[in-house]
Image (tube, rainbow, N blue to C red):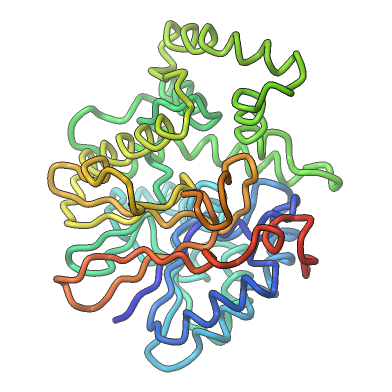
Length: 374
C-alpha cells in the first residue's frame, strides 16, 4: 500500500496561516495524492485551540472536502491520528475507555468516527466519500514503520514551552512518566489534562482573536529571538530568560534549557522523541512524527542526530507559514511548509521526505499573499 503522511495542517487557524486554505497550495497536495492508496493525517489536522470546534471545522471543511474527493475510490482510505491541538477529536472514545476501565492503551487502536466524538463525525463527513478511520496514539504503516504525532515528546523536552511546563506541573500532581518501560496511558496522564483545559478555553474564546495562550509559544519566541529593533520590554524579557529557566529548574518542573536557537530546538526535539520511542519500546526501524514543524532529516543535517540506537527518525514538518521561523531564500528553511513523507510497500525502501511547496513563493504562503478561501 502506497502511503503519504502529512501532519500539522492546523486547518481553521484564526490567523490564516494554515496554508492549505490557499488554492495554489491545495493544488500541489491534491496532485500528489494521485498515486496514493492511503493518506495519513498525522495530528493537528484541525486547529481546535484557536476557537470553538464548530468554527474550526466549518473553516476546514472546504479543504477536507477536496482531500476526501481526491482519495475516494475502492481500496483507498484516510487515517487520522489526532495530536495535541485536535486531541478532542477522540474525546468520547477516551471518556468511554475511562468509564469502562478498558485495557491499557497500546501503540495502535483503530477508532470509528461514530465512537470518537461529534467533532470526529463532522470531519469524517467532510472527507466523504473517502473511507475514514481514526488511529491512536499512532499507526503501523509497515512492519518496520511506525507513525505518531509526536506530542508525547513534550514530557521529555528541554524546551520551556507552555506544554512542557504544563506537563511538569501536572506530573508533580499525577505522577511523571516512568523512567523505564512506559505505556501510552502514562503519557496521557501527564499531558491529556492540559489538552482538555486548552480545548475548554477555546470553546469560549473571544470571536475576534485566537484563544489566550493558543499562540503563546510563537509570541514568546519572537520576543526572545528578534533583532536589535525589538522594543525595550522584549529585550528586558530576553535578558531575564536564563534566570527564569533557572527558577523553573529549581522548582522541579524542568529540567529545561535556555537554548532556543535553531540547533538547540532541533536537538532538544530529537532527543525528546527518541526518549519517548525508547520508553514506549516501539521497536520500529523507522519512526515518523510531526509536532515540532521542523522537517527532516534534510540535506546537510547530521544523520546521527536523527537516529536512536535502533531507529531512524523522520519528521513531516507542517503546513503552516510561520514567519518567525522561515528565514533565508524561498523554500530553503527547514520550517518551510508543505512537506510530506512517502512510505512505499517494499520494506527495504526507507520513508522518503518530499517538499511539495519548495517552489511556491513566499508571497503565496503568507497571510498577506493570496486571498484565503473560507
